[in-house]
Image 1 (tube, rainbow over the protein chains, first blue to last red):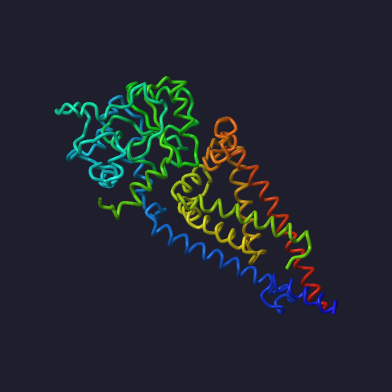
Image 2: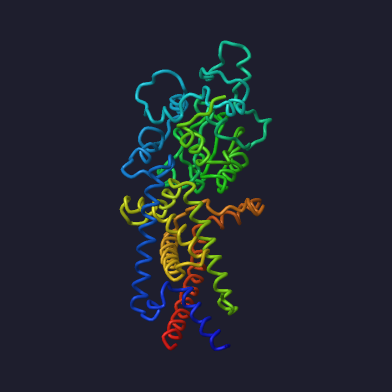
Length: 267
Length: 163
């Protein structure tokens, strides 16, 4: 009885590991089985990987130079002149500007009736027209000004709020991730200033912008803490009066702008 | 099924490794471009299409291996794959560390544990040096489990053939 139990236990142990007892008995076929399993795993990963990335709006695109060049080519990368604000104005939803990347325009353009939720989250009623300079109507003056020093500094901001600020040139987006991550994809209009930059690089970067310009710092996603650290540094070490950091980072932007692009819920 | 406590521990450790692989895979799949960027950051002397293909396939390989380890299926194959992957990670992070590349991947957040108030510790845990040691530890674990599994299976096979 006990012998029988021992035998069946040994058999079950073997069965647990191997599909058939015949294969168990032959190590050669066993290694062949492992190779077959490895090949299956790899094949499944390749199929799933390519299917996922081609269907996902945030997926990696082969031959899609745009996802890489979207960054470097037309916007920033190169040293930014003092008249940087003009370049930022390029992001505004204003009429026809000359040489603009259509994709960037498509992504960043108008903040108009995005969804009902974002508009509510934005500061008061932001008009569709760009609020760069004080508009004609009186109440609009109080609408968009960058946060004053009284407000929490650095403060948390979300993309729905950051977008109009960046688009109207009232804020500049600062990407603090590693440069290669920035090159792989970033928010259009953002400037790369990796956390690992030297103090001289920080100073040189900040000297290009007026002191009261709002800096919106971001990194990868909620799982990264670089943006919070750099934002704190910009306030304490470099005395910037208006610094915000996007806790959701680049992922928040992607989710808001790319993933939701096809279907916009109606009120 | 596995009455031997040693086997039970082994099973538990395999499951744990599987969960870690799943966690790593999901965080990569959540933002593929970000992952591609972090691969570029290692400045490996490899052609870009190969790196892109790696960024496409690797998270799924991790995911499948994690699932297999958690489910207790194809253990040998899954462990062999994970060991191979971890060996590659060790080489990649090791060379980056030696070259002094400052890659703060931002993939290990302490916010969850409420420890983000310590920026120095946080920066260390995000550093490439920490990633290297973490991978080395995991590689040791995976190698140990793989060797044990192979040995166990060899004895089981011998037993079965004897019977």
